[in-house]
Image 1: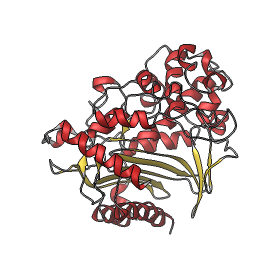
Image 2: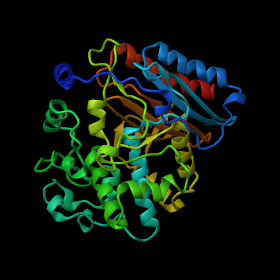
Image 3: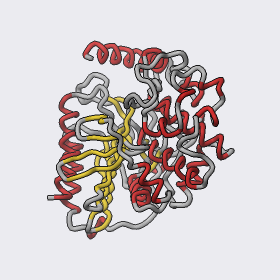
Image 4: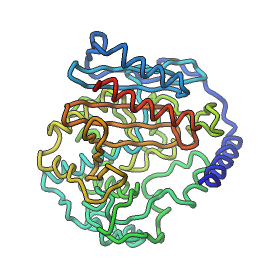
Length: 394
């Protein structure tokens, strides 16, 4: 693992040197900063305590963070750190962050909405909706059903392999789309057969995004908007492709190449991780992400039957005390069951977590990643996640 990280670090440094980009000074108004509704942050009895946890995380080496907490006292929104270091712009509650794989919850929810409408079935073979010219080139794909994509149980290989890494590093700003990404798994063999085990793959959700476009006759952007963003009035929620995928006032994302708590902007890399289909790429603020998750957990977006199906936890443990469902994950932690999803790529990390026993919701957005981060940062991140929970429940 150490040699892999060294190799990755050298390639990233080389790529940044080749890009020769100049830092751009931005105006604060460039960064989206609108809230969809009011909140109770100013009168929340734990406001000072929650804010101190965020500030400690920034003092321990993070760049910026935005949090939404819904507990028995109401909804609290808080931020700390920077949206843009070079421009000296602080992050604010309405700022959009990229949420990486947390986008998969939106994709799964859209799929289940079409199940509710009787348009598709979880038992549909995926080659019913995706042309065999694509599925024939992806190991296991012609044997997979929609349920296998949702639950990562089809054994389909992931895009993040050596060939993708070399393209990713050697040529920034590739402007890939979903079909471009699938080429990285064409002809690649898998280690699992369908239903033989659990293996996380972004390809599953790229394919689900393609299915959504086929069944709806719309772009994935339009599906997200008509099925989720607009009905829930998620004003900050944004997804697009090609040259428009970052035209949304998203805060800058940063990475620590040398593991020394010195950050560089990582746009060369995270721009290639978005706009590639249903696996990731939504930008949103903490309030709207929390609103989406709350409405989903309350059964207000899809049917109760479909919500139960999303939470049909499999016997495959994806980590100790953690089980996978159909677009959601369940973990048993210190304060009980946690239902949600995490996400991250170079420049950003995100998590949305619902505690069903206490009806508590936490959204955490960060514009720093831990891919090459120092031990100091990783320790600070783990402490941050624990301290937020302790502040809420103790």
